[in-house]
Amino acid sequence: MPLSEAASPANRKDKHHIFPRALLQRNNFPPKQANSLCNMCYIVAEENQSIGSNKPLVYLAPYRRQKQFARVMKSHLIPYKYDSGLWARNIRRGYRRFLNERLDLVRRAFEKEAGIRLFRED
Image (cartoon, rainbow, N blue to C red):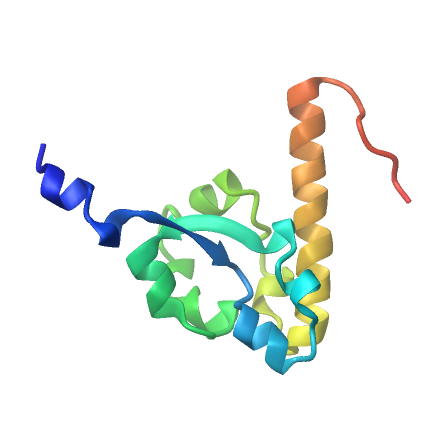
């Protein structure tokens, strides 16, 4: 096993803002909303740094048609279907929709794992 590659800083995992903070800041979202847990996942640091402040619609485009895309997105509880907020051109509406969708996926995953209803629906 080549430890130098596996342990390199480029392979460390970074906390990734699915909707980048700078993008949300430009669209008048306060830091508290940009840093929502529903907007986080972990990816390899090098990939995270290459995304910059691009919209998910832009930086996910090269991966969207790949065979494993749906499986990877499901494993991270990220809503990815055609009507997801990820693909919205309007960042304000898309981000709000995305947060609601992701919260619902996370809530359902917790309840499935627990085998009981844990959360009330508002």
